[in-house]
Image: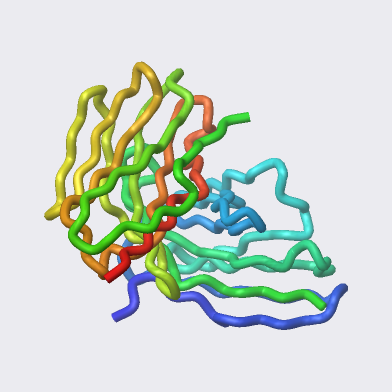
Length: 114
Length: 113
């Protein structure tokens, strides 16, 4: 069983389009995250979501919005895609959102904006 | 700006040799230091979380140490095997990091048979 799954794995789309990436975790975790792997391979936190509390990285454009229909899902919606949005996006979940938690990552979604 | 630096960026090691690499982080307001292992085409997987100065953790041939006063952690691999080839990421959590993990770019380890 896949603990954290993301769909799609690959996404190729045109500039200006709106797209969503889905994430589901079956670990019963309370906290979920979205990361962007930038061009220098750093993992940059975009959002964390814990018990309906959303913490947003202030550097994330408001074209990006997380949507959580329930505790097991945190989807990422992107409006008006730009070339610079091309990256690998990782979803993760953790037990508590606290400093000692282990995070479990999904396989990543490779987004290419043309 | 909070930065985590890892060195070297990449490392080629002969099978059977031991190796180590470094993670440097801001030492103020420190809460925890995490090590993750990231194999190509897979997702990052947790190795260790360390919180106390002087902490040492071990998992098989891999071990890690922590110095919170000077802001560094070492990861050691003893008797490297081909399956150790991966990128090793460290991440730290501090009060000043807004309760988020701040990640390094990783050390890419390649084991030569």
